[in-house]
Length: 284
Ligand code: NAP
Figure: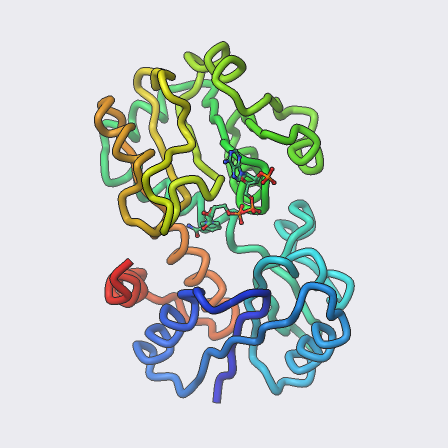
């Protein structure tokens, strides 16, 4: 019996149980994926939960806000990605060692690549650019994952943050940090080939707002990626498409990060369509 789960707080709205339950069924594996809410300051319960993975009672865990950093103190090792990011979203046992991985960064990159592969002209255009430059809006946990992923893939990164110090917590000296306002962004705009929204602005239920400032033109020929997956088409994505830019929301990243975690726990490389079908069935 495979026992998987998610810890964090709060957890009610997570789609992970739906995605992983579909994957278990598709692989004909007997198992469950449960929610283990642990309050922000309750390190004793967090450690006790991780001990269940160590003892084999649980096969593996996903970790979300606010525990992505808290769990590190209880682990035996980190993968290079989790180490560099200083954040863990997947815990698994390897050679009796409790390991932490972060599948958000490779999940984002995998879906960005799928996006490009779906449009060969776009892919060729991107491949032809010598110094690819990305603007990331926001400086929270997902901005950190996106910045790490793009930097690994050779992109030049600019992070736009309303609290500059938040971006400096993870930005390396090669990354540029700028104030998140139209004045600062407008000055840098023409150079960007990719704009990523890593803020919750536009997420359900407040879907009538956009992280893109009023009156700001989109850079010509850029791509837009909005990490939000609810709704399926955000106002930001609508604005980008209306300006002629290819744009997509974050369902693909959600599926990729889940599939990579599932592979660590079960060894199964699940067809992404299984998780996409499960996601589509949620009505998001
Ligand atoms: P987070 O850690 O709370 O970070 C959010 C960031 O956005 C912070 O820097 C925050 O700044 C900034 N922000 C919030 N409201 C803003 C506003 N009105 N104007 C400017 N900046 C604002 O959240 P997260 O985990 O990174 O998640 C961000 C979004 O990505 C969420 O919508 C989440 O659902 C989505 N996401 C999607 C996936 C996926 O798989 N597709 C994965 C992870 C996250 P302050 O700290 O100053 O508030």
